[in-house]
Picture 1 (cartoon, one colour):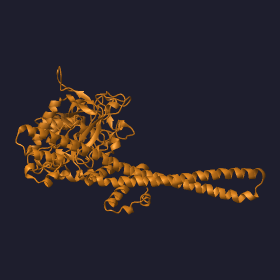
Picture 2: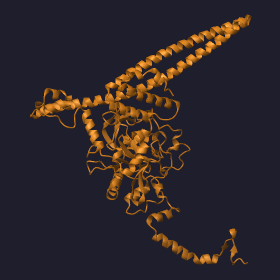
Picture 3: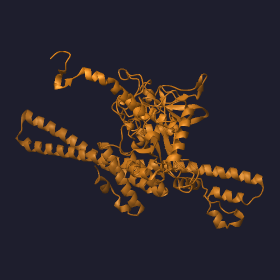
Length: 595
């Protein structure tokens, strides 16, 4: 067979170069025709030399508990539910932001108090979101909540909302975080997205019965919302929320991209979901790209925000940051503008939250919040009648703030009303402070009860060990006394010395056992005293605090198992005490449930 004729290739396939070359123009023309007819998103997929998976640009690591809103071009915005275990009658939770690192800028990043709450509850979510959120929240499903974006907003999601077509939604790098965008442009993005949702999927947004206008709003998160979620939110205990760096991890590099020696060799952000999620299920809160917040930057003075506000707060560090700069407590002020225009950066992006308006409209969250705050301040939702029309008994039943308000409606002159208004406000403020103190006292008391039970477990363990030690010494003494009559000389001398040591050790062990038994009695007496004090506090506050304390106990190690047993014991004893069965609370019942 000549070289110009057909020849057999490896695998037995016959190659016919002449015929293939003849068909080349036809094949190329057909490919060009298909490309021109393909939709823009398919063209982008071909440009990437592989069929793109749309989920890669919005949820590459799908997991139970994911909640999503639709987006244009067949994409979605995925959230995780964040519960706020509010305590007491003020219906908010205390949170310490910032960091305790020694190298912090003292008036920028040091520890400060913040408070979080929400007017959105599980019932306000769209029906398809509720079951998934309830499963992920568990015992906290009755608390207020907000939704936090599971990932940073990607280029694909940005293009889907901001472009006239879907050309970029599945294009190259569509799963990379959107960067080089100004804060004002992000506001425009959220406005356009909300308008699209309201026009196309209004039933997907949270709703609030009593006001048809009120809906949940997609926006940038507040700094406090961002930091609480980045630290692990309700999935970690209070102690972990106060840590300096990340939640408990073995290697922070598994959870984010930052500038560590020998680690970040790409010098650019990676696709979303590339690193492990935090305990709440959020990806990329450490590094990759830093993130914008809704909050104006304020300095920190005396554990509180200073009065002067500046640019917005940037959180989370980026692929350019070192590890410590990616800690959730770190923060940077970013001005809206520099001299050359709006501030943009190639390592700065954003994620979004879904939250409720705080006080407008009505519905379960807002009604409960406003009514509870009014009662806490000593002001019932409905104003009392003028004092002149009330009996002495009716007046006596009012709170101080209500009495002043009633007096105000009995006077006609503006000067007297203004004076009484100031007095009423002072009473209200004092009531709120007192409620916060009561909330703190109840939490401290409940935690003390748990640690008293834990301490009794440890004391009983040590007492048993001392008893065992004394018994072992007694057995050694008995054996030596049995063989002593047959001993003589040096052997007898050695036995007598050993007997003396064992008797001394036995006496010390018995004395220790007696001391520990006495200590156990004292601990139980203190426990009973603390238990009795709960009658001084509102029952709903105690129940709420106890429910949230259980959420703080994490893990299955020995300490966690002991604390869970202590929690269960305190819960049982509170029920016995309330029902008058105080005789059922004793040391024996406590130690019987020791883990």
